[in-house]
Image 1 (cartoon, rainbow, N blue to C red):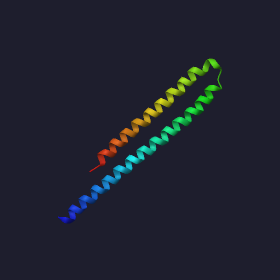
Image 2 (cartoon, rainbow, N blue to C red):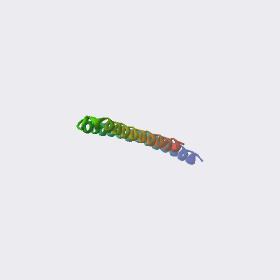
Image 3 (tube, one colour):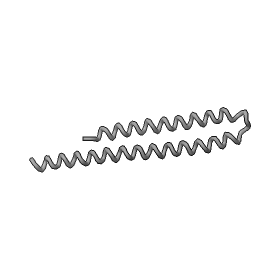
Image 4 (cartoon, one colour):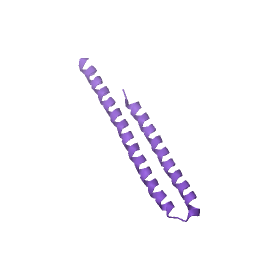
Length: 90
C-alpha cells in the first residue's frame, strides 16, 4: 500500500510539473506571437508611409486590423493552452 501511495504522489508531482511547463510554454509562444505581430506592423506601416497620401489612411487601418486580429488570436490560443494546463493538474 505504501508503494502505491508513493507512486500516486509521484504521478501527481509529474502532472503538476507537466502543467506548469505547458503553461510556461503557452506564455512563451504568446510572447513570440506578440513580438512578431508588432514587427510585422512596423513593416506594414513603413510600406503605408511610402504610398501616396490618399492611400495611407486605409493602408494603416488595414495594418491596425491585422495586428489586432493577430494579437487577439494569440491571446485566445494562450487562454486555451492555459485551460489545458489547468486540466492536467492533479
